[in-house]
Every structure is written in structure tokens, then in C-alpha cells.
Amino acid sequence: MCFRAHTPRRAALQNLASSSATYQPVRYITKRFHPRFTVNISCASARTRLYHCAHYRPAKLPKRSGSGLFTAVVVFGIAVGGAILFPLLRNTPKYDIEKAASSPPFNPSDFTDSFLVMAPNTPPGRPGTLTPEQESKLREMWTATLRMFGEYELAAADVNGTESPAVSSEASSEKDVKKDKKKSRLNVFKRNKGDKEDKSGSTPSSGTVTPSDISSLSIADDDDKHGQTKQAKAALANMSPDDLRTAFWSMVKLDHPDALLLRFLRARKWDVEKALVMMISTMHWRLEEMHVDDDIIKNGEESALRDSKSSDPKVKKEAEDFLTQLRIGKSYLHGLDGEGRPMCIVRARLHHGGEQSESSLERFTVFTIETARMFLRPPVDTATIIFDMTDFTMANMDYAPVKFMTKCFEANYPESLGTVLVYKAPWVFNAIWNIIRGWLDPVVAGKVHFVKNVDELQKFVPMTQIPAELGGDEKFAYEYPEPVEGENAKMAEEGPRLALQDERAELVKRYLSRILEWVVEGDKGKGLEERRRERDEVAEQLKQNYWKLDPYVRARTLYDRIGLLGEGGAVTFYPKAKVAEKENLPPAQETSPDDLD
Image (cartoon, rainbow, N blue to C red; front, side):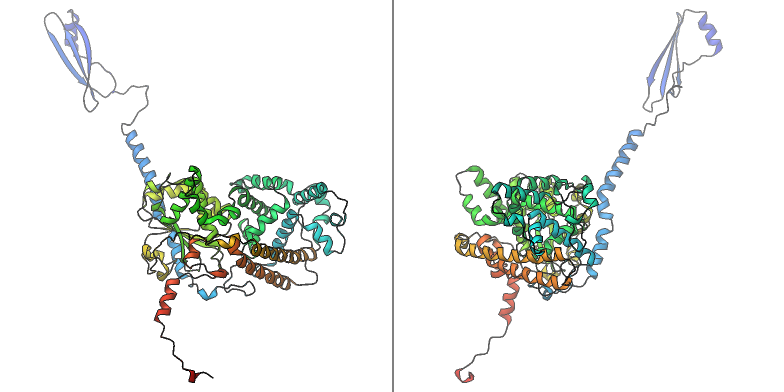
């Protein structure tokens, strides 16, 4: 509105001019923001009040809409609503569900307990299904690994029929030996001008090129969101070759050694340097940070039960927090999905931030992942996680454990996650998912599927294998059996343990000799199939040795106590179903002495 005084008629102005009148405009604002101007004209004889209403529009100010704030609020609301509703409207889960429904059901008979038998439907990139290019990458990876252990040069000299100075020189001091070992560990990945011009010292006879100095080992920041280069260099600086070797073979456990290296290669798209960084970082994480094998697996539940009665408040708190998660069944392992993968069911409603310490949450997570590894059988080498979001509220959301779990699967347990099913997620979780998805590697994010009901869930898991609490037909209710005193008595028997460890050490030497022969000689003499069969034979012996050694190095878990994981690694995924089948069998026919020969 512009300010404009009312102009009286000319006759009236002439009359006013001849008098002693005063002109006083006064502004009154109405509800519609149309100012009304009142003009008081005073004179000695009379008082006149004139009115005029006009729009107030200053000529030099821009036009402003009175609805600007309202429009901004509406646009913001639409944007937020779109962000929340987008996960519900996207078509990716629908496509994945249809794809899962079209895939053939897994037959449990496809499992094999032997590396000597090629399992049906073995995925690509595994032992026995490698292309020639992938075989070459595996060979390069083994070459770099052996250099890191300080074994390549010595063994290569032995294979070539020459005596190694480091072995034959008795005059070398212990200090010189350690120096040589450190040098052999660091000389794996150096790419300098000399190496480019002359690669004869770092190239096996078949022509496979392996860089020679690990001191310059690094990967781009874009590929290193978990800081693995820094961890790998810390491991090489602070861990001896023997420590690295021990960490590697303790990580192998019941796996095929080739399969373990192939996990890292597949995770890093067959880039040997990136895969080696990842593997070294993982070994450092297991040995120095989480103490996976010398604490979590070795001490287990019985040790936690003892610590829960400790007089040390900190020790008692950590143990109680760990056991609490087991007792309430915050997550548990049970059954197989439609592709034969072991399932881990996570009941999100049972978690409340701050109830357990962060370290106990991490311990419980690693404990569960390591236990799940015990159930993997070729051709299956991944697991499925079902997040049961029934009755989930914001009080159950805790970003720290999610970040740790994400790091575990992306950085320390590569190629171990098959699929993630988010079951019955409420609408409030959609905004949370938008945040979590930003943390995930695109490959991992692509494995996450939302299923709204049991009908969609059975596209991934047969109805007979879905636990009843999720709406399925599997009559399973989680119950935690407390540790039994003395269940880990074998771990105190030093004699049998040392004997089995010595046997394992000999098998490791035999396996490495097969690898070194392959690395040094290449395609000469034996073919790839023959060399692979030789490694498979020793890998099978290593696996059998592990299950003999298992009671002496791994504390019993609830899955051992309920019979899911049996002696010698026997797995019974549905023990109750098998018992029921036995009960329904016709009684055995009685025999008399006359029937016997």
C-alpha cells in the first residue's frame, strides 16, 4: 500500500485556505491490509474528517507475496514426505522378490563335506570354477602372501635346487635373521623404476608379475573408507612374519585356503594389491584389535559366566552385558533360506541404546559371525540376516552397532553376506534407512531387501523353514541353555592339543609346498587341474584336522549344547524335525535267534 493523502475538492480547499485550518492525515490499518487514511481538517468554525483507502505500494520496493512463507512450508513438506515415501514406492524390492521366486529351490543334498567333491551349483570365482585369468590372480595373491610371510625367496631357492644363504649360513646372528625376515616382509609391493625396467627378480617363471616392496602398498582414498591402508602398514611395521603367518592360518580354520584368498580378491574386483591390503588389515584387526581367536572364540560363554561373578565391576559389567544378549536372544542362528544359506535372525525390538556397553555389543557381533562360519558348507559360503522389525520404535534405534556391523562385513568378513531381509519395517524406519544406505557400499546395499509380510518373506525362505514367530511353520522358539561347568575341559588338555597343532603345522607346510611349486614353476610340468587336486587333498586334511582340534581351541556355544553343531562339525539344522520323523517311522521288525545265520 502506498501512502497518498486524500485531496479534497477544489472549492473545499479554497474555503480551507482562507481559514486557519490544519491538515493532519492519520493512518488506520484494516484486516485486509488496506490502509485507511483519515484526514482531520480543523478550523475555528468546524471540524471535517475525510476518508480514503488505497493500496500501499512503495514505488522503489519489490513486490512481495504474502503467501511466501506458506509456499516454502508446503514445498518443504512435500520434499520430506517424498524422502520418507520413496523407499515404499521404489520398485527394487518387488523386482528382487520376483527374481527370488523364480530361482530354483536349494536342495540340502547339494551340500558336500569334502573339498575333493565338486559341489553342484558352485558359484563362479571359487576353487574349481576359476577362469584362467582368475587363476592367474590367485597365483599372484599367493606370491605376495608368501613374500609377506618371508617364505617365498627361501622356498623358491629350494625349488630351483640352490641352497639359501639365510639357511646355510650358521654364522648369521639372530639379529641378522630378524632383519632379513623384516626385509622379506617389506619387499613385496614396491613399484620403482628399477622394477619396471627389470622384473626378473619379482616375476615367477610363468611370467606372472608381482611387485616387490610392500612399503609403498596403498589404495586410493575412495576405495579405503575404513582406513585399511593405515591398518595394513601398522600391521607390517609392528607384526613379525611369524605373527602374520599365525594370524592367517588361525583365520583359515575349516575353510579352503584358496577360498579364503578368493574372498578378498572378489571383494576388491580381482585387484591383487587392494586385496592384499584388505587381508593384512583384517589379520591386524583380528589379532591386535578384536582378539578374535585368542579371546572371543577361546573364552566364549563359560568364561563370561565366571566373569559375571567377578569382584571387578568393569569385568562383571562386560560379562553380564554379553550374556544378556544371549539370554534374551537379541539375535540367533537358525535354519536355512531358500538358497541354503544359514540364517541369523535379529530381533530389533530387544535392543535399547545404552543398556549394554559398546564393547560388549561388538563382542557379541563378532561372536555371532564367527559361530555362523561353523555352519557354512560348500557350495554355500555366505549367510542371510533377517532383521525382524516387528514392534520397532525409535527407542530401538542405535547407529553405533549398525556402523560396526557394516564395517565387519565390508572390511573384515568380505563376501560373507548373502542377503539382508528387513521384515515388517514400520514407516518410521524409512527415514532411518535413507541414512544407513548412505554408509553402505553399493554392492552391500544391493543385497538389502524389504519384505512386508510372510508371503513376501517366503519368496526368500520356504514357509516350512520360517520360524513361527515370523509367521512361518517352523516350530522353533529360542531358548538359551546356560553354560555347563566343565564343558570346555578339553581346552585344558595340553598334550592332545599340541599333538594336533603339530600335525596341522606339517599340513600347512605341505600345502605351502604345493603353492610354491605352482608359483615358481607355473604351467611347467603339471597342469592346473592336477595342481588344484593336489591342493584340494591337503585342504581336506586341514579341514579334518581343524575339527579334531576344535574342542581344544574353541569354547562350546549354545549351538553345541542344543545339538545344532555336533561332533566333528556335523550340522543338524532342524533337529526337532528329524526327531519327529524318527518317531513316525514304523517300529523295527523284531528278530529271533532262528532268523540269524
